[in-house]
Image (cartoon, rainbow, N blue to C red):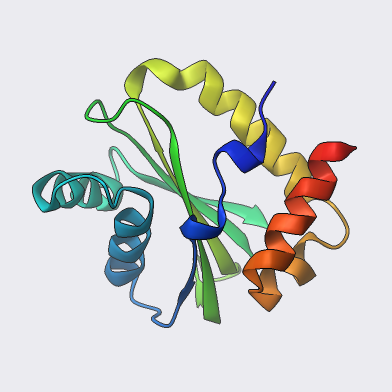
Length: 149
């Protein structure tokens, strides 16, 4: 069974002070893939920005997801970016929290289970308020309480 705390830790929740999509993607990639060399991170960054490989998904309630499938890693990696100001995704939607998920090609089933679990977390009544506050310990505690249900 998926445990979100296996993927989301204090070290991969960051505050983002920019509204530039490229800078957001770079910061999130650097956060969740800091053990990879710069060339690999740049390749993944480009893949994330490429509409063919990287996707931006509005998860509603101010949450968004960008993700990419990459064969250069062994495990799913996640970074969570808390934005100081909302950014527009489309004319009618915006985001305050962006999840960046990098998936190894062979872990599609795990990714789908992870997404289902994450979606359930984000539909919890207090999710938006907890994430928007940007308090890392508060977010981790919220996820821990969700996992204990």
